[in-house]
Amino acid sequence: MNPLNHVAIIMDGNGRWGIKHKNSRNQGHKAGLNTVEKIIRETINQKIKYLTLYAFSTENWKRPKKEINYLFNLLESFLQNKIEDLNKKNIKLNVIGSKNFSKKLNRLISASEKKTSKNTTLQINLALNYGSKIEIINALKKLRKNNIKLNETNLSKYLQTKNTPDPEILIRTGDTKRLSNFLLWQLAYAEIFFEKKLWPDFDEKDYIKIINKFKKIKRNFGNI
Ligand code: IPE
Ligand code: IPE
Ligand code: MG
Image 1: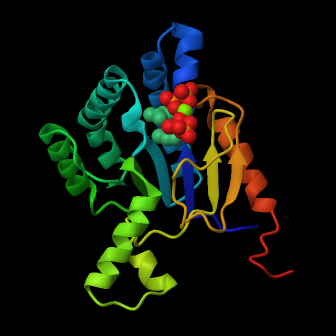
Image 2: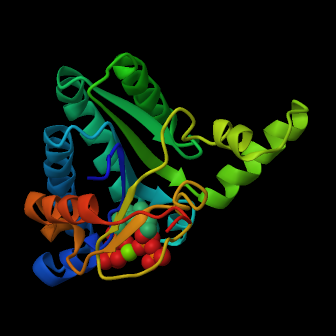
Image 3: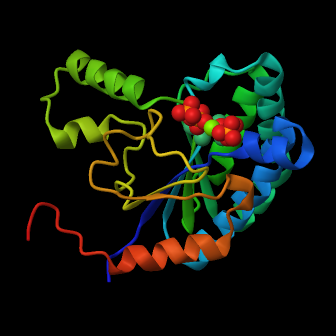
């Protein structure tokens, strides 16, 4: 059976779900939060140590202001209301992406990270204003500035996912088969699962099915 330490998820399909069920994309984002909670719970049940969730990409700024504001308000109240609970569950929260939001949100993120920094059951990397290409460029710039030899190990150390093993599984919900600038380096050998279901409809059973399928895959890594 394949070991499993890290699951990465592109949580896609909220907007379509919202339009279909509530005639509002934003209501889809709200519904998507329930799935986030379910998946966190099951990740702990499965004893998986790292979970990286794509919540907002560097490209998502192209969306209408109204939707962007709704998303960030949702995030703010999630952090305000749930950080205590995450902390009790011994979860460490780590935000990846460029942290240049409102003062209030920046402060909330820093406080949440600090509060949970010593926790060890599960590390959640929340990808917010995250883009993989800019992450790689920034890592390369730092290596050059510090005169550090450019090789795979050193580059990995300067990515925002430093100290996190590469994901063995990538899940993308929402019936779309692309990476959308997510973890391009880190996913080099990931097993990829594209799910038809929209994120708010995705549940523990779907998640467990993927995990069980993954465990039986013959992972070659170039070997035979
Ligand atoms: C993913 O759902 C969540 C974010 C990008 C914030 P979408 O909002 O992309 O949902 P669809 O793809 O439009 O249905
Ligand atoms: C990717 O979904 C980003 C997140 C899930 C946060 P998008 O819905 O933004 O991706 P594209 O634009 O369809 O590729
Ligand atoms: Mg989408």
